[in-house]
Length: 528
Image (cartoon, helix red, strand yellow):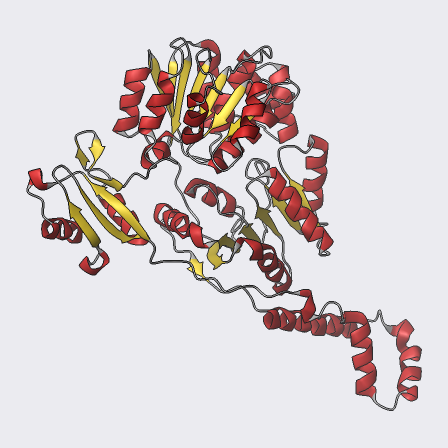
């Protein structure tokens, strides 16, 4: 526990600190150092401002777990997250941080059976982590009761706003009791979120962490367009075409991590996994093996990769595209260290191109598209390595014990070339077999996919289609031919543009407001 003395100084007890040792924590991040004592010792509501990937989940989880002293069977806290992926990720981390307490933490989100979630809640749960739409469904069906909670946590508040969830958040808040602690966490603090805080929070304080610079200087960044079912095949080709692959493959969940490690081992690769459920002893052993290069392939989740310090990785592979630009930078920053260049590869499926654009825009870097290596290219790379291995042996003296046997075989063989071919087949037939690889289906990501934008100007502002197009052209590089379906109504307007242009327009007009609302934002979609 000595190495966690900085966490202990924040007010956490040994029972809460024990899982931190198993997960590899060493010292609190800035947002954790601010939030943990404020939650443990104060009684104010909190607005926490820090970039994604800075440990916000542990910042609110640890003090809440410290304060929840016993399992009641009733819901004591609810965490709202903007996406199902984030809800699962937060629930998994809270589960690993609560190890040994017997608490039940239940994720609820669209796409999973309502009946399954009803049974989970009915049998008793202490903390619910959910997406707004599914939480409202469960409230309306009288499955989820939030009228006696102790904590209400809003994670990624600005992303909630971007996705049009503000009304949903207020609806959920109306179903909760008044005497609860509220925590809003966000990378930025738009006026709309501050308005919700002002209306629903009591006395509160703002805890802000200085924004980190996002840098990716020494890393070559590329992406491959693949279907979900072809990711494993693409990964194998990337590993096999490299002469000395030494890298980390990032997955989204611990289950994804376990499945991928199993498939890699079955394929003959020496891979091991890191995620929140492995023991500290196992973690330390795995990291020692990886750092000493006894294994060259580590499969990890973002949370479990915390604290990995390796200077000479050749590759970081985003098997699953990260949730946000900060996580992307944090992942790929593990290459390009100590002056050595590295390669970051991201797999994207057809539906993920927009997220890739957002990462490029925020990090101000180009991620180049490349094609997955072809089977013949991989085999040719392996053939070249066979030549290099044989030449290395020839340059040494380790083959002298086979000299007499070689002479006898040459005397018995009428064709020396056939003899060498037979020996190569015996030694390298499986290695050079094209049948080891299956076809990867060509996929074209829809880069012309469209986004619908909402503009808070209409006929009453004397806005016309031409004026709107001219306004966009004047302040951005967007061409008028890219702007389609301009619709002008009395109080507002809509337009449709390609994904990339939409990101540029929103970023350009980000600071311009119409009352409390952004002048231009992504049009809200109906909640399913």
